[in-house]
Structures are given as C-alpha cells and as structure tokens.
Length: 271
Image (cartoon, rainbow, N blue to C red; front, side, top):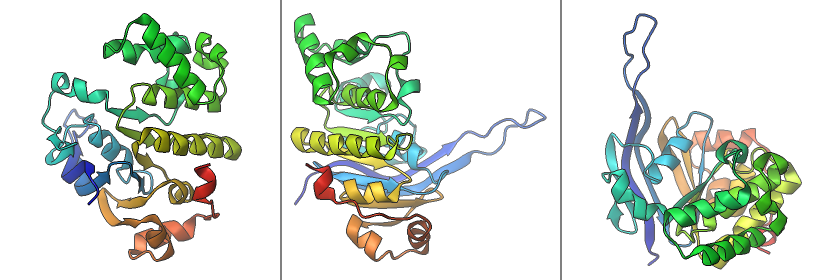
C-alpha cells in the first residue's frame, strides 16, 4: 500500500465576520465544510473549483497557515493542526509553497541570491560556503543563469521570477510542495516550460505536490488525482483520467463543459 504523507479529515474553516456600517460584527463566514483529502508520498493531486470555492484556504490549511474550526491535518503521521508556530518551525523545512504572484512574494529590496540564502540560514543548514554552493546549484537546476543571483525581482521576466519562486521552494529539499495557481499569469509557452520543470523536479526529488488551479487542462496533464471543490465541499475525487472522462457530479461536468480541454500529453511534460 502507498504511504500517506499528508491527510486532512473533516476540515472546517470559518473566517471571522467583518464589522458592518454600525460597528456590529457579522456572523463568521464558513469557507470549508468537513473536507477530507489524502496525498500519498510521491503523488501530485489537483485541487480545482471556481473562484471562492475554498481552494486557497484549503491549501493554506494543509500547510498549517490557517487555523481550523474543526477537523485535523496530519503530516507524515503527526497531527499539525494543533501545533503552535514554534512547534511547526521544524516542519516548515519539509513543507513549502510556490505562490501565484512571484512579484508580490519576492522582496523587491533583496537580490535573488539573498532571497534564496534566507531559508537556508533560517534553518541553520551548512556554513556560508555550503549554502552558497547550494543556492548556485538550485538556480542552475531551475534553468536560470548564475547572473540572476545578483539581480532584483523587477529586473526579471514573469517566467524567470516564477522559476525563482520554484527554486526558493525546493532549495530546502522539502517532502511536500503546494503550488497555488502558479502558471495562471504566464503565457502558454512559458506555462509549458514551468510545468515541465516541475515534472522533472518531482521525479528527481521525489516530491509530493498539491496543485491548485482553475485551469483543468493543466491539472489533467500534471496531476495523478483530482479533488473538485464546490462551495467549500469536495463533490468529487478520483484519478484524473477517470474524473475527466466520466465525471459523476453535475458540478464537475459543468466545469469541464465550460472550459476547452486541449489534450496535453503527460509524457511530454515529464521529458
């Protein structure tokens, strides 16, 4: 049997209500309603749904960045939903995130080299020579020249910034990476290059990934299984090809019917 690396059971999240015009706080707003998800080691799952379906909240919950109102999240057998930040810190090295907008997630006042050095220093990994060598190796691994390390984020293209975001996520050699809409702002050719890179890194580093996206063709190409979210609930789950070829839920069928699904060969992405 495959080993489950990350598992969410009965996850409920509700955000505090905002204050109205007369200062009265509105009732809490439920976002997730008893969500169950499991990720096997070395697997990539897709999390899809319309805007507001709870995809990003679920992703942040899996990383322990959003407090739960109910339910549990276990990472490598350890319950993490009740841990404080100090207890979570050792696990942060093993759980990383690639953000949708690399421009807003990269410090504009830091050179790229400094940005990539920061997590290694934070976790006390190696001496200066070792971490510098590791940073140079990872920037080369994501297909960028060493000169990028001396540049600032605004001096790079969107595709280059996203590669830097990927480098920052994998420089710590994590077990789990959450990718949140990471190709939505890129042109089609750059999307394909970034997805190919992720496929190579997954294979070479034995990464487990959760891929949040509204682009169903991308999810179909890069994911092993898919979870379909509708108004904070999982309405369908299964192997990608099974779900896309024979969706059981009306919401899933509506999503598939609404978006053209060009066939992208997963073998091409893995080359």
